[in-house]
Image 1 (cartoon, one colour):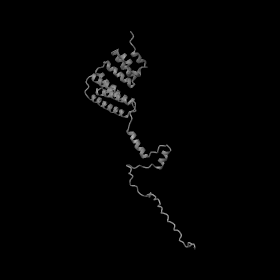
Image 2: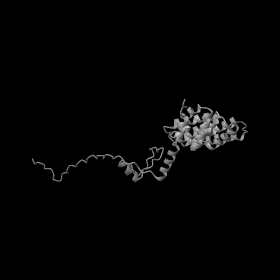
Image 3: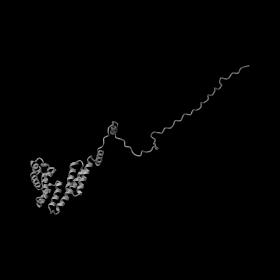
Length: 247
């Protein structure tokens, strides 16, 4: 029996198509140019430092201050004044003079205000107040001189006020008027001697002091410790006047 052979033209087997593999989908990247609207705006604008200032900060140096800024800083610093260590003392000295002024002891008040000016040169405000009060005291003293001075004591009291205030010429004028009304008053002679000693009139001071001691011997002891006669301490004539009398 004849064997059947398969034809060479037999169909070749058909290859199965591979299943399509899905490529992974890449996430979409937004363009850098896309505007972001979700970020909140800063509440205040931050000024960028200038390149020179940034370099100075990086090197550890203080940035330079502009001339306008320096002027503003200088203006602020001049407006704020720190009281000096002597401020409290200056105020206390000024108040002492004011008390004398209210007590109408204008001569001593002027002396106190002058001391404030001399002792506290670093307190311009206190000095200005003291100078203004000196002027007020001088006006009060001048008002007194305009009144009618009838007695020797009237002239003497005004003279003492001028003497305490350093107004030596005015003091001597009133003392001379007082002396005319009471030529032998030892206290008037003593005051004229002190005023002349303060002015540097040594001969006149010694002459009036001698008359004062002649009227009242106790005045020699007062003159020996009186600072008004400090300029006469080395004078032999003054030493003779204040020496106790020989028994």
